[in-house]
Length: 307
Figure (tube, helix red, strand yellow):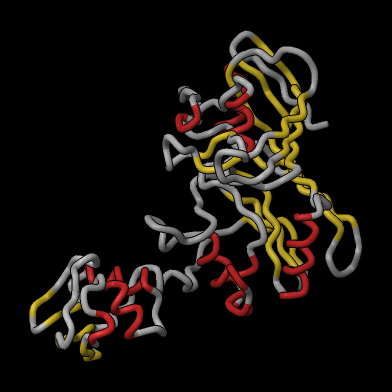
């Protein structure tokens, strides 16, 4: 428990803002959560609205409880498919449904928690060595660092487009024409903040995004596409495919429809290639398609050639 008194300089301020001034070692977001949890009293009465105004000379107390967020970075043993490891890095084949990093609604059971259980030294690295992410319902290959030097080198190489990340996508509508290079900025959808969208950077905030698409097979029902990332924006492949009229099967957020075989976006990170950040050796990994994507491809009479 910590006691405090509202000074004259904070008279009329919001409670969360006042507490952020009085208890600067904790974030305003952390303090807001504590207020909403009933851990704050003013003049011996509980206050649960962060926006409540405060008055000079009010006496208060706050119980500094741990929040789910503050407890998220803890080791949780889980079965992870490690396809390569050395003292500098690991390559993980992530299953469908595994969240990569703790976030609201997923404060435990993430890949980060599993990495902390796999290697105690991961706690010394930002984000436990995670240098890029996959959506929860996207499966496939990820590289994670085991040392700070490897992490910094991998981050720089991803930014310099020196890490090859290729995906297989099953999408709606037959493919017309040849390969396509989509260069379209991505930002938060101004009409729906839960989605990302192709945006005009002159009018909306966002970041440049580039993806190269090659059709591997096409039928009246849909197409199988190899996608090569040149940048790594949130939902990049999903947004770019939808923007050219080919939403991914199962991707209901961006206009796709679920099928009997696929209840999630049909996207799999099947190939990962990069120069080892320490040894300089060229590393290349491939991941087999999950059963649901194989079933979806077969149901549409499409064919997959790994080459």
